[in-house]
Amino acid sequence: MAGTVLTAGVVACTAVFAAGLVTAGAGTVFGQRLAGVADAAALAAADAASGAVTGTPCERAAQVAAIGGASIARCDLDDLVATIVVTAPFGRLTATAAARAGPAP
Image (cartoon, rainbow, N blue to C red):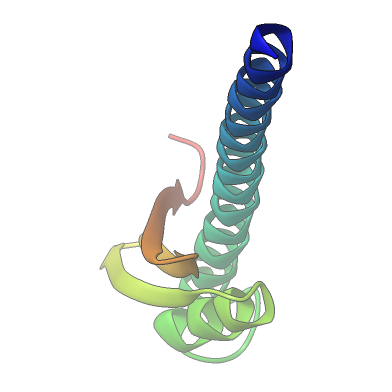
């Protein structure tokens, strides 16, 4: 009887630990994906600012972010350098990523 309770406790602890690891891994993957969306949106805004593509920079960034499942939280332009902050929901939390793109110095 005591061995059964101990075994059940070990299995329960292992299951909770595994669920925590899976959640942390999913958060890491989501964060990296969101960083990629921010990079793409910043590049799109910088391209629009330089005239390489048509449209306004922040609108281009918002289009790219929407394709990636995110929304623009902030769009700043300094000449041809675009700084973009995107957000997306991750469960009950809101994840944020930022990127900056422009011509080489």
